Length: 363
Image 1 (spheres, rainbow, N blue to C red):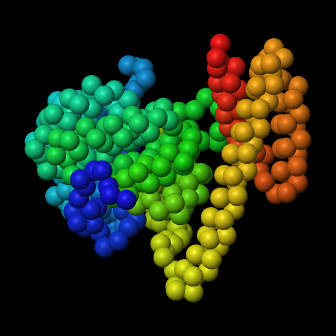
Image 2 (cartoon, one colour):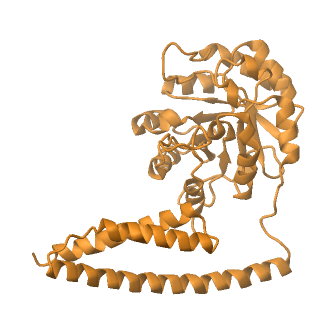
Image 3 (cartoon, rainbow, N blue to C red):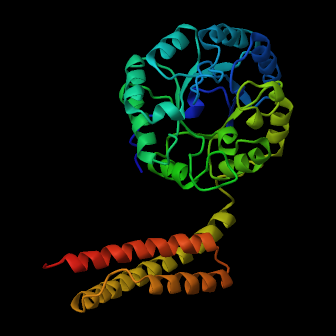
């Protein structure tokens, strides 16, 4: 598949031999001592190449700590000089961008709250027109891949070639163990559409608390994401923002040591066996598609019959029976209840649509 974005490969501009790429640092820069102490410890971890710190913090309420602002740029300069780490900050408007560029910040990132506003992203993009600097784009708060892609496109159109997407989870009304639901299918689809685009995971914002960080990070790497952007504080218990989701440099080192870095490709024997199994799946998928096509043909016949007899499309009793019987049978066969419900709901939605079209014909 030809990549629609003109992107410079990650390994050509980052000082790393191979993924995973690790960006680490506190949620907020709070003091010069806190920033430098954290950076010194992170510089001892070989995988960490970039130091992050929020200077301008978009908060829900004005009474919350909104960052130290421009003053923190001097602290990041000292981080670069003393540790050799690259630096990155979040920018939310053209003023932030200009100040960060003038202070020698190496990488910019656009946060979830900014990405949702195309006007803000376009303003930032115009300031960056012709500037050769990497830009990371976090996913928007809402689970809308088009908004995420739109922000990346705006930056690419003004000449930003060193683009990185950051998956930080999505706000979701249903109760989940996470602060922001991972919804892995969305970053997976982004990688499918744009195979040359590096994608990092932000386990801190997905999890909201530290106990979930390890499994989320491992899953991201298992899904072939290129690395992580993680919040690390020298004293998390004293943090002014998001203390529950920040880990210490020692904990980051332990996390990285415990991660399993899997190979993208295996031996010839492995690949042959994998191809054999995939061929079986391909055959089954073809059968499924034919079965689904036949099912929809019958659905349309039912729609015609209902129309002839002036019967409503939705039959709640029948739908309830389908849910109960199909789910119970599927669970007995080893399928998950959630998967079955999603599948049946998709089939039901399509069936209602087909029958509605039948009802509306030749009126």
